[in-house]
Amino acid sequence: MTISSTLLTATLTASALLAQAPGPPVLVHLYPAAIDASGQPVTDLTAADFKIADENKPESVYFFRKPDTAAPAPLAPLERANRLVAGPHTMVILFDMLNMNQADRLETWKAFDKNMPQMDSGENVYFYVMNLEGTLIPIHAFGPKSDDDKTWPKNVAPLLDKVMKAASVARPVQVGQEDMVKKTYKALEDLSAQLAEYPGRHDIIWVTNGIQNVYNTKHPCNGDWVECALYVPHLGFTLDKNATAVNPLCYSSDLSPDVNRDLGEMARLTGGHAYFREDVQAVVKEVGLPAANSYLVDYEPAADNWDNKWHVIHITCERKGVKLQVRERYYALPDSRQPLDRLRAPIIAALQSPTDIAQIGLRTKFSPIGGGKPGVHLAMQIDPADILLKEDGGKFKGLLFLLISDRNASGPIGQPAQVPLSPELTGEQRDMLMKAGAIPLEQDHPTADATQFVRLILVDANTGALGSLTIPVK
Image 1 (tube, helix red, strand yellow):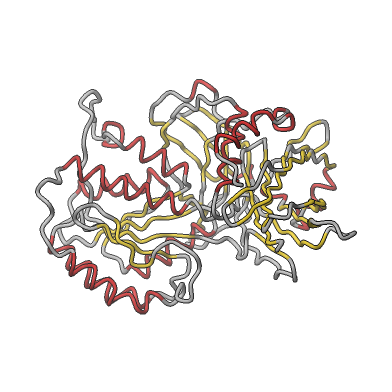
Image 2 (cartoon, rainbow, N blue to C red):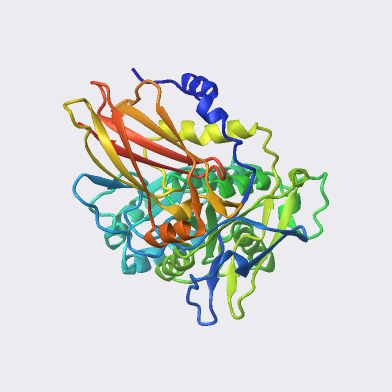
């Protein structure tokens, strides 16, 4: 019998263990990519190298993580991991027909047929077309890994041609300016939600000629369309929540200052980069380089910061010659939930998710529990770089919760077991674990007869970050 969302919420609410947690603060997450003068990534910066100002107010780094560039060790027999490659980066190409005229749609179509087969690999790259009715049509869709994940661009032309020929009609007359905006933003948000199921920062390469705007007449524009356009706050908040940057790519032969400005603003709003008349395979390669080498920098603004307004972020690097690519503003939407509710929400999502989450890296070797009893012995390794260890009186302390959920093909079975973890390390122990790249943890877990899988869920109560890993036991 599966466990419903309502029952999960009630169970976690009543948990005495989770009630011990203070709950994570409301953080602003930034994913700066550092580039040197030759355009190469810089991956050895420290938290002290970054300076942050929010609306000209200095902020301190709350949590910091370097890019994960080391190749993970091969899996041993009976071992599973939620990160199988170093610094995985996932992106999607969106061919936006809705915001193009017919001539530019045809020109872009020809360019894609010519250039996409030249991509080195299509792995972790997905491709959708938005037709003239605002519907997303998959060319290479999100989903389970398949044999053609690397090679699909070589064979994309016939699939794209079929979609384009079916869509070669005039835009429906009932689709007005506001409809176009809504449909466009919904497509970007829907794709970012799909990307959010993959680890790390993500990118949308948005192939478009620009976007119509719908303005809020209550706010004077003063030349800044982000501040006065309707629906942009929701888009910005959603893309931020899903750690997705938008990189506009425009092939139009009739570019204007307004188009350049708006597409550039969209890139700066999300931490992407705007491209004009560049081959798509080159853009894919260029977008992937900084994204796969991004830092995670979190800061905690004061409570009165969350004022339902756009905030300008200014983040700089103290090291000479290093340039940062990072978003320049965010919408300060208040989070009225109690801290404990902010902690429970990602746990419930992880329990119900069809896939694992890799904000915190987990590796686990499993074996029978021994003594003829049903269950598994779990020898876990937690990536210490993904959790916050606060310095307190010369010790580095963390606050984690491990949930172990029995599952079958339909989802969770019963209530998850809950294990509180409060690591307390000396500076020497912390440095040793960071160098080793793993915090070891062993746990026996009895299982029910109906259990087919066990899902481990580790949540950092100090940051809200979470990692999960599903293991077959039958």
